[in-house]
Length: 63
Ligand SMILES: [Zn+2]
Image (cartoon, rainbow, N blue to C red; front, side, top):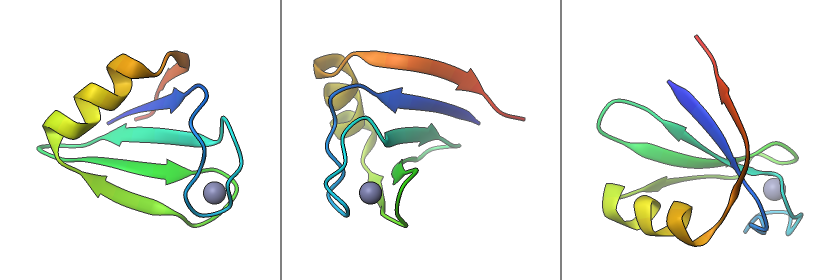
């Protein structure tokens, strides 16, 4: 699984910036926030467009 932080993204849960990251799982991608329990499943095409618009600030692999 990969975890990528999204620069400039504002959390829909707590409205904090730069706390949102995407986890790339098998066949699905989900948005999460490090400051609250917000999570949202995204369709692949939607996530790809978001990642292209936003600049990743950190890329970290977790096993
Ligand atoms: Zn949040």
